[in-house]
Image (cartoon, rainbow, N blue to C red; front, side, top):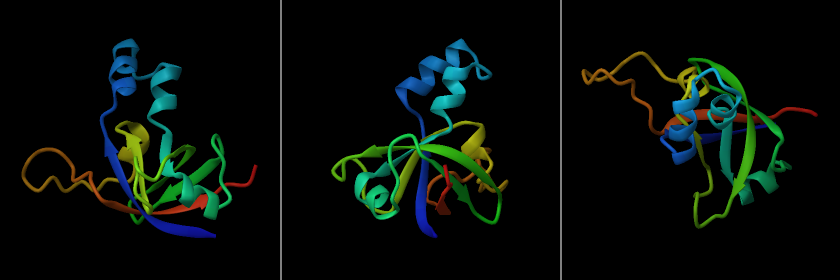
Length: 115
């Protein structure tokens, strides 16, 4: 069973420091393929830290590891991921004339992947 949520890609400190080590290094790839989810959403979807989820929309899809966040840190129905190869798979090519793809409030389907 999948749920529709809003994906918010953004920058993170860990992403920045791991980027200096290299985009092809394990640390960077792990950080940019981990989604942070509201712990209430995770409980409702029977997800636990470290479980895999598939995020998809009309543009593309990818598999990510999930990590819980307290409701005060991340509202219900929203998920966060550090910018990287994974989040780019869900962004349209339209830049609105600014040269950067529109990358906020991306509506995605989130589905638990069986272990």
